[in-house]
Structures are given as C-alpha cells and as structure tokens.
Image 1: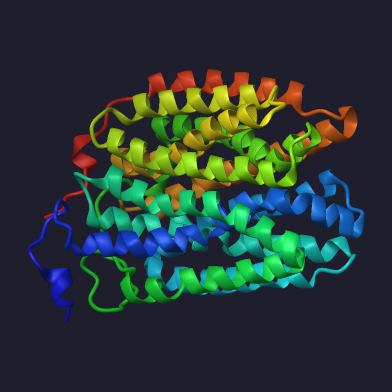
Image 2 (image 1 turned 60 degrees about the vertical axis):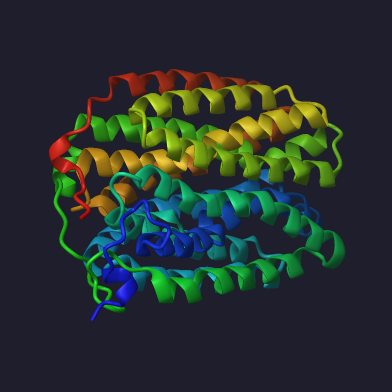
Length: 414
C-alpha cells in the first residue's frame, strides 16, 4: 500500500504535499550529480593535472569531451529505460557507479588513457545521476507548479556549482588534487543514494516499486517529427557549446589574466550562485509566462555574459561575466524539461529528454575542445568567445518561432 503521506489529499500548494519531498531528494541528488559536481569542478583540476602529468589543456579538455560525447550517446537509451523501468532503479545504479568513478580519479597515473577511460564511464552513467533521471518523477507530481518544482530540483545543481568548486580548490590547496577527487566521490555517494532510495518515486507507484505509471502524450517518434522539438534542440545545442566552453575554461582564463587561483574559484562559485538564482527566477517565470519568451531572455543574458568574459581582466569583470553565464546555465536547465512536458506530455518524456541531451552533450564536448585549441594556437580565448556569444544571440531569436502549447497534452494532476 501507499504511505499515508503519498495518498493524502494535499495539493501542490501545500508544504506537506509528498511531491515536495521528491523535489528535495532530487535536489540533493542533482547537487552531487554529473551536471554539477563533475562539470563545475572540472576547471579547478585543469592546472593541477597539467602540472602533475605535463598534459596540455587541450588533452585535459578532451577528457571532458569524451564524457560529454558518451553522455550524449547514452542519454536516449537511458531515457528509454527510465520510461520503461521507472527513474528510481536507474538512479540508484548510475549514482553508485558515478560516485565510485569520481573517487577513482584520485588514483590517476601518468597514462592519459586512464583519465579518458574514467571520463568515458562517467559519461555512460552521467545522466542517470543528473536531472534527466529525476525530472520524470518530478513531472508526474506537478502541473500548475511544475516550473517551480523543476527549478527547485535544479537549485541543487546551483548549490553544487556555487559550493563545490571552492571546496575542491580548498582541498587541492591543502591536501592535493587526489584528496579532492576522493572527497568529491564520497560526497556524491552520500548525497545521491540514501534520499533517492527513500523518496524518489512516480505519482501512483506503490511503495518502492520501480515500474512507471502509464502517461498520456506523444510517442518519441511523434516527438522527433515535431518542428517544436527541433527548435528546442537547436537552441540547446548552440547554448551548450557556448556555456560549457566558457565554464570549463573559466578558472584557467581568469588566472591567465592575473587573478589568483582563489579569486578565479570565487568567480566559479559566483557562477554557481547566480545559476541558483536563475533557476528559482526562471521557475517562477515559467509558471506565469509563455516558456519560449522566458527562454529568449535567458539565452540573451547568457550571450552577454560570454561576451563580457572575452574581455574580463579583473575580479569585478570576471564576477559579472560569471554571474550572467550562471543565470543562463541555471535557467536553461529548468526550461528544457518544462518545454518538453508542455509540448509532448509524459508518455515518452525521458526518451525525448535523452535525445535533447545527445545534442547538448555533443555541443558540450565541442565547446571546451575548440576553446582549448584556440588557446593553444593563439594564447587567447577572446576571439572565439565573442563569436560564440554572437551565435547564441542569434539562436535565442528562434525561440520566437515556437508555437503555443497543445492543451490536450497537459499533465493532469488530481
């Protein structure tokens, strides 16, 4: 039988509504997941790994690219499994492998292949330890406050992005990068497993069963034939190239321009903090305004931040650029799943979300590598960052081509 708190007559607006417990568990899981812990701390390890093993920045960035490409390739089948078996089972398996893989980076030796193999494993399980896996469960619990619920889940990613780079840098400064990786892996297991085991379930699932509840909406085949799906995906692709490239090289770029490692880590943490604010504000906006119009504004803010980063040569300038990029990174994370539920329903939500992640991750692999190559070739990131900012500004305008929502696909929550 269902626990009493699940079957109560409380609504989305009530604090005791069970869906908010699912949100809290998902928030902490996402905080330790791939999109937060691995992505936002990666730049902190670039120089320590280069100093330890003599690897180039392009070679180190290629590890990030391997993880991103693998994540993209594995996301559609992973989404299909979530739709078929339910999110809870997939989350528990993937989070266990993910946390152990992060910790194993503390055992790296001089062979670059070991780093690449570990990044590959992280990519395989990454979206099972991120908001792709959690978003389906959340979307079954909310309709009227779905934007805010998804935003609060992504608050975890914002907290992780704000706190974890500074934590990693502090551990590196005191005990070395190996201790930092071991600590981050342990943290992922501690935050990701217990609450997910206890609280993550879809609405209508009894006890700790893992099978999903059937939902209405388009099939994934119908979704990929939709004009709206490809607009959302195209915008996400351009955004991912720009944001992931900027985020991955943020610390290295700022220290190259005279900032201390501590101040660069502060900018990275500020990026995480602003992404936290961006998630909350965007969630509030999505529940009140047309989603594509919200997306247009957020994409333009991101483009401005990347443009300013191209010329940042002081702590205030670095902080402002990081803050604007963070708002965009936070907002984008809530916008994509929200639009997918509104346009396509929940029937194949995770599969379609996984497909968008294929393009997001491919772009996320391209961005860091081309910026690393630009630096290795010219000694500067500036020209390419300006070009990426312009491309994102143009992509933002295509949000105006998205149609109105199909009311028949709205998720009914009683």
